[in-house]
Length: 424
Ligand code: AMP
Ligand code: GLY
Image (cartoon, rainbow, N blue to C red):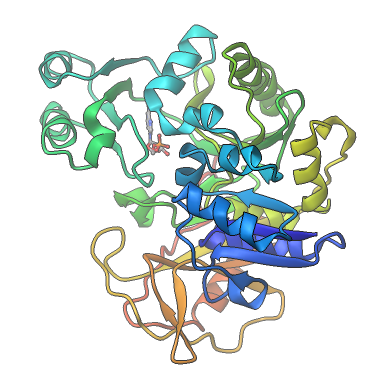
């Protein structure tokens, strides 16, 4: 089969590396890809948010058997619908299901209507009403821009002043663009966080191994929110008991809720969860693989990923037995100085002599004059497996030191958090 993968991050590099192992896959095309992906796939320079242009390219190419759509924007814009309407096979939720990520107001309403545990909230489209509410609500409080904002449209406000300023920035100053026209004001929850991703064809749901992200730019979870600075898998506090609770109270009810709403979800559903004193609660849904979660999940997958994708598209996921390796995996993101704010691009990257069992997934990289250079905020993900998280963590850091580009920075504490929490 010839497969087209949409996207250009570390997540797509990990997806492509997994697909490359499938005996079913002949050639992979990546739209638009990056310098690392170029070693595994042929790059296609089409704007994947222009769904019609992607459809035209696939039609004209004529020999693409399957397309995998992983980034949030093209899913929300209906790329899967566009390809299917032209008779092509495509993996990922349809537009009417991708809304579970694309609109926080939608997902909060869904959870309220179907009794799925989440933080209490109010939604506002009008600044004055929101302001009145925030003047008296419990503090800390969380403000969320309704639309997609590259994972940055969330403000955790520890004081009322911060909350009032944040509200003004979102709703009046449009800091997150039109995503902030509607704002969800949410109860602040406390507890360890876990990314629980699952494959689903809308009938069957099969959880993947869990992972934990590090969203803040600096050590000890300080600094601004980013797309994710590192991950480890599995979450030590998420054992069989918690998994059972999540499947019964969150995963199955969500699939059923989406079906009941006429929005059957097929693809990867990402449950961002918090383990609170009142049980597991949903912080967010994503309609896709996480980045950098995928970089620690897929290296542990023993089953052929192409088989899973095809089974989901064909609605026969119940027939596939999905197996995972034992042990742990850690991913450390190497970022451009300044990220998630302003940063420079075009810095040459040198890799040094890396251990054979370490993988580097490329995110913001490009090739310029025959050299690999930086082209984004999150540049590389250094990934290693180990018998446990500590072993994988040490391997990752020992190898990250060998990589260099001007301005490179990374968190020093990936894989440390939650290690004092009771294992389950
Ligand atoms: P989100 O983009 O919704 O995942 O939010 C980004 C981060 O903000 C999450 O990973 C949490 O760490 C934090 N967060 C979001 N909602 C809440 C909440 N209700 N209570 C506490 N922290 C939250
Ligand atoms: N790592 C968080 C996300 O992919 O949304």
